[in-house]
Image (cartoon, rainbow, N blue to C red; front, top):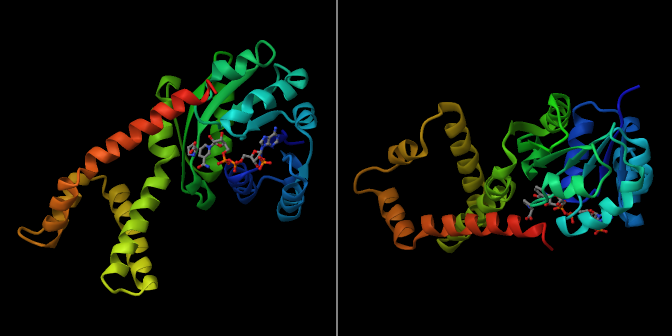
Length: 267
Ligand SMILES: NC(=O)C1=CN([C@@H]2O[C@H](COP(=O)(O)OP(=O)(O)OC[C@H]3O[C@@H](n4cnc5c(N)ncnc54)[C@H](OP(=O)(O)O)[C@@H]3O)[C@@H](O)[C@H]2O)C=CC1
Ligand SMILES: O=C(O)[C@@H]1CCC=N1
């Protein structure tokens, strides 16, 4: 029998991971989920054919517990499952800002805890996840976390002290890209393009630019310079971006996300 994985908290990220595991061929009978709203539980049961159980039952039955509740809900969740958790189980936390030490201190001594920062492009198997070991982890626990996250995209290992910055870059990162996309579409509409035309133009431009970055491995500055004809349209636009301090705004925004991640465990 395959090892059982329980996803505790099936909101946006929990469902993203669950759907990815199923797409990657994991059998619904090897998965469990927990969800406190009955209506949502029924929806997930129907959509994925996976058993929805209580947190305590998930902790009793699964070999791997993946914690995907909000950071603010983590203390209550850990208090609920602690009586059932055994050192033979692996606990994987996806919560922003929650350290492995925070989780370890609320569970029985010796439990292996892995901290993961995923992102929502995992829904289309283009996720970026960074994983860090807790103090009771060995190679097998990291490999287990990697195998779960690799179902939905790329996985890298980082020292835990980098996780708040990772959260600010790749965890929250899709939101910054969508913000840019929204702004570009609005600009197109402002200039008289039909919204659907503006959307097609922007989405394909973002996908194409991302592929160009990934497939050429060129520095973004080089790629930007190739678009920027002397005295042309791009130069005029980039000058406006610099005048409006967009680069500085990104730095401040991403530092704010990093600082927020640091603060979350204290709430
Ligand atoms: N969204 C994202 O892009 C990313 C999120 N994360 C992390 O993932 C975690 C979840 O975020 P996200 O999915 O966005 O948030 P959601 O609010 O969508 O999901 C959290 C889910 O957990 C449920 N829940 C809360 N407490 C319990 C409990 N005690 N037992 C069972 N279920 C519970 C909530 O139910 P209810 O609706 O009833 O409150 C909700 O369905 C966070 O820690 C976040 O930091 C990490 C990377 C990216
Ligand atoms: O906004 C958040 O707190 C979560 C963590 C990273 C992305 N979403």
